Image (cartoon, rainbow, N blue to C red; front, side, top):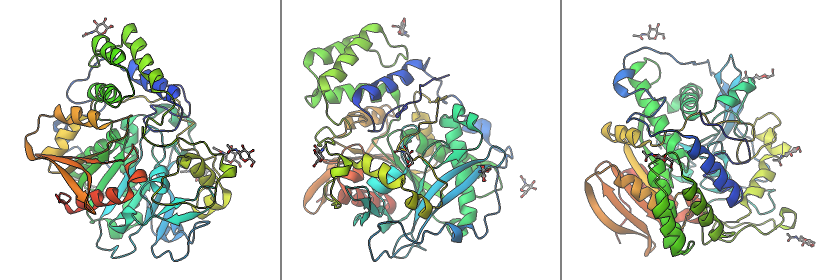
Length: 482
Ligand SMILES: *[C@@H]1O[C@H](CO)[C@@H](O)[C@H](O)[C@H]1NC(C)=O
Ligand SMILES: *[C@@H]1O[C@H](CO)[C@@H](O)[C@H](O)[C@H]1NC(C)=O
Ligand SMILES: *[C@@H]1O[C@H](CO)[C@@H](O)[C@H](O)[C@H]1NC(C)=O
Ligand SMILES: *[C@@H]1O[C@H](CO)[C@@H](O)[C@H](O)[C@H]1NC(C)=O
Ligand SMILES: *[C@@H]1O[C@H](CO)[C@@H](O)[C@H](O)[C@H]1NC(C)=O
């Protein structure tokens, strides 16, 4: 049982609080995990055990609800919006009164032939509206938090994008049974997200047979593979909706505790954040394969955090937020990511007119949940699930903004190396507008791809490169080599 104190950040893989709080929360979670799991992570039945048993999930009548969810206009949205937007709740458990909030953006062109893509932010406990309004959605928020401007590189240019706030207790998603908030964890999150998907497809039946992909970042390195796995198992064992899942893409993704932790400290040292002495101490005193940390290891890793100083760990080369929202300008540019994005997002989504337009009940909206009290299960590794997805023919891309210090490229590389996959295309640069957009290495069944100059939230910092990457992913092709 992993017990976390509810604060702004839980596992704090996302950049929302100061470095000390983030560190504490991550350590707290990792420390409470007891022992390394057997190949099939806790709470996840193995595929062999799970087949054939008919276990229907809750599916409700959804007729006419899509029309009600249609957004007329979002406050402060620019003129000339040429696509449909929908948002609202989908009930996932009527007895508990549990409902998940979604925001859905159709592609402006040929939406009826483009794939359906789910996006999930991490945390755990952080809102996917971060992705929608500060990363890859059709709009970004102006610096004063009051209006919107168009994102020329929205992922909805090439797909129909569905953003889900998950689990209940995050953002606008809620439960009328507040004890649900004490039972949050990876397993319940995946189960509810699955029920959400099948009900959402009833509400939007034109998408039922559409190619479906799941994308996300950070702690969604757990959510995304786990949901894909849940879908594949349910596709086999029920005669309910078959979700036409084709693949997943995860960015700066936390997929294995041991390799991710080692990769993080190695990155800090190799990027001039930590001293030689501290890094040597970490190598000497820390055994990240051991879930029980030692006192010496705790001491030296605390030192590593101290040495970092007040930088944005989610993009170590980015400016930090120093402007009061009240003093901010009413402009914004897709090419310059505003470090005060979180204040802007809270101001916008906590506005009652915006909440009305989004069809939600009045909510004190925050970027990460402040009602979830515990995170009860979090396998130390999801590499076995990744392996299962590869074996079952899912397209699998792991992308990484290479200036992120939280789940850095080294973490992704070490995690993927642990899979021991044969190399299919050797490491090479990929290009956009004659510049190196990043690097890639294709393994059999999995692509590792970096985005040069991007932090943890890749599309925030490199929207054009991120869109090129995403289009390539959907097309199943590697981005250009020149
Ligand atoms: C939660 O309770 C409110 C107030 O009774 C009700 O309007 C709402 O439909 C309930 N939500 C769910 C998902 O049942
Ligand atoms: C299929 O679903 C129906 C309900 O829609 C149920 O009555 C039936 O038992 C199911 N069949 C199997 C083989 O699970
Ligand atoms: C894990 O670390 C604890 C505390 O330092 C130690 O007592 C234990 O022997 C270690 N276990 C293994 C398997 O190394
Ligand atoms: C905001 O503006 C006020 C008045 O112009 C100024 O006194 C204050 O220092 C500014 N605050 C920040 C954080 O920029
Ligand atoms: C959102 O607005 C409500 C009411 O205006 C306020 O009480 C609450 O503190 C705000 N929440 C945040 C996270 O700013």
